[in-house]
Structures are given as C-alpha cells and as structure tokens.
Length: 409
Ligand SMILES: Nc1nc2c(c(=O)[nH]1)N[C@H]1C(S)=C(S)[C@@H](COP(=O)(O)O)O[C@H]1N2
Ligand SMILES: [Mo]
Image 1 (cartoon, rainbow, N blue to C red):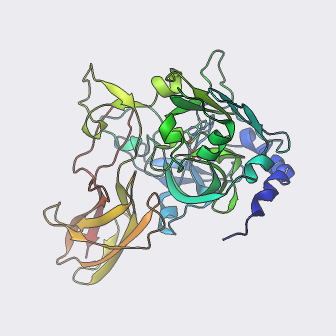
Image 2 (cartoon, protein in one colour):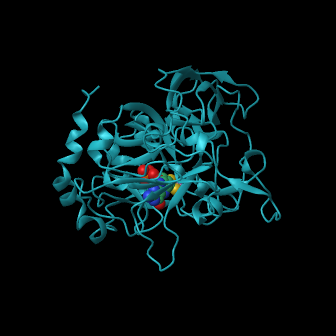
C-alpha cells in the first residue's frame, strides 16, 4: 500500500492530464483497429475495439459521444481488480471537461447546512483517508442480452469493474458543513454540461441516512492512481453495493435537501418496476416504479470461454468471478446438468464484501458431447441468482444464472 500523502501528486499532475486528454478525446475516436466478437441475440455479433480514448487501453466501443466504452471480458480473468486503463466508461452528456485546473478546483457543499463549504483538493486530501474495494456496475450491464431487446446502450457483460477506491468519507464532509435538522436527501452533481438547451444536468440523490452511513465515499484514487479523466477525475462518489448511476463522477457540487429530489435523473430516469427482480412482462402497464438501488448477486465464468473444447473424462479447471451485490459472497455453485444438481466451488480470498471474489473448480465431463456450464452465486444475505432472466423496458438489473457452452471431446 502507498504511504499516506502519496496522492498529493493529484495537485501537481494537471499538465500531464491536460496533454493526454485534449485533442485525443473527440478527434480520432472511432478509429476501429480490430473487432471484438460480442454476439447479442439478433446481432450485432461484432464490435469495434478502440484505443483512441485518453488514459484508456483496448476498449469495446459502444458509443463515441458521449463515450460508452465496455471492458473486454477477458480482462476479468486476469485478476479481481479491473485495471484503470480498461475500466468501463459511461457518460450521459458529451460536454465533458477535457482537463481540470486542479489548483482552482473546488467541491461546494451547500443547501440545508449550517456552514456552506468550498473545499479545495488539498482540503479533501487533509481529511481522514479511507479505502474500500467495491464493484462499480452500470444498471444496464448486460442489457444487450435482454429478449425482447430493449433500447439503451447495448452492453454485454463488461459494463462493470472492481477497484480499490481511496478517498474520504462523505459523512466527514457533511459533518464539516453541519447538516441541519430536517434534511432528507443529499444531491450530487457532476461537472459536465448538457449538450441540449434545457437538458437536465446530471445529478443523483441519496437519502440523508445513507449519505451519512460512513461507507459512502468521495474517492480521489482508483487502484492507487488518480482517477482517469473519463472515470471522474478529480473526485467521484463511491456508493458501495449500489448501482453505478449513483457514483457521480467529476463531483463538484453537493447539496443537502430538505425536500425529496424531483430532478429528472433521480425521479424519472433510473427507475425500476417495484416487483421481484424488477421484472415485468413485456407490454405490461400500470406498474409502480421506484428508484433503482442495491445491486444483486452475479457470477461469471472467465475461463474457459463459451464454445471452448475440453477433454472428456479428464479433470478440467474452470474459474471466474462473483460478487454478492449489496453484501458479500456466501458461495458459488456450478451445474453441468441444466441445474438438476449443483456443486460448490472454492472461493478465492475475500478482499472486501463489495468486491469481486474469485471462484475455481475442477471437474470431469463424463462423456463426449456438448454441455451447458452454469454458475450461480448466493450472497451472504442468502439471495441467489434467479434461473430465468428478468425483463423490464430499461434493461436494468440482469442477474440470471449465467450459462456457457462447452464441448467435451
Ligand atoms: N458526472 C457523471 N457521473 C456519472 C454519470 C454521468 O453521466 N455523469 N453516469 C453514471 C452511470 S449511469 C454510470 S454506469 C457510471 C459509470 O462509471 P464509469 O464511467 O467510471 O465506469 O457513472 C455514473 N456517474
Ligand atoms: Mo449506468
């Protein structure tokens, strides 16, 4: 672990960032160098790989303006922490600052508080430092697999990532400002601008008790480095166990509210049916909706890949990652007989309940032929992944038991 204070380079590395970001961001983005095989039901089967975005390596290009970049799935086989240069990217508006004057930057805390604040990065770095490993997952991760298909970013499974986040407690910042009695929510705003007149600025709100739970964090570093620009440099909110829509990037404005937030991004967008698994029948109407909130358990095979060939009657190792959602992983089970029987895998080191957990198992395919290999996570609240996919018109919260195809020869 780095010594305390190592992030003071945040305030001196502005020029480097500015050079990396300016120009490259919007000019040559769609330079497709190769294609990724990423079949979605009904197509497309291939996506462009891009390396044209600042501070990013090979990424699957979903959209250029605003940038939507997906992590190539093989990255998840390399370790539990997702490298910054291949961590997925999602923005709602394209007018994103391409460099930040770090010595002029301030985080404003205002609204229903005793003492409005304007904090410099140095002020933030002076607060007690906290660290946490947590999964950041888009509500629409895996949306491309919804059937019937739904509109929105056509992600496969790479709109998620796991990182070590370093920063300060949101609670400490709110305490410094002194929240007044009667506060109900806290609203967070990012620095980017809407690209259409009267477009709603990106903002999200949390209940006051959630905001002050001591876990919600204002992060200034990711995996021991400053945040990549596209992942929210210089500050972003980290809301462990909750979908990434709440993890506001380029955070520079915090407003304590004495009335529930009615802004578009909290009240209208990012709502889910208030039903089990947020699932409804396609076409179903008059469904009560609520804001999306806690994540649910998921697990994936990272090796071998679907369609791979293995030897029958010989031990084969399978491995992957799982996460519990809003709590830790209790167990990860696998099945090769369409879910009739399940067996438990060995779990890797627990790096924190909100993070990815490795699983691994050895098994023997008794005979030659084609098999479905299924993987299912049960979290420490006793919640398991469902056998059938959920459906809702926004394509949110997919967490069906994953299945890959294996050919034993
Ligand atoms: N300022 C700002 N923060 C934001 C968003 C945004 O559009 N603007 N999108 C949110 C959504 S929906 C997601 S999925 C995550 C993506 O985080 P990442 O780009 O670091 O992976 O950022 C969240 N924070
Ligand atoms: Mo998202």
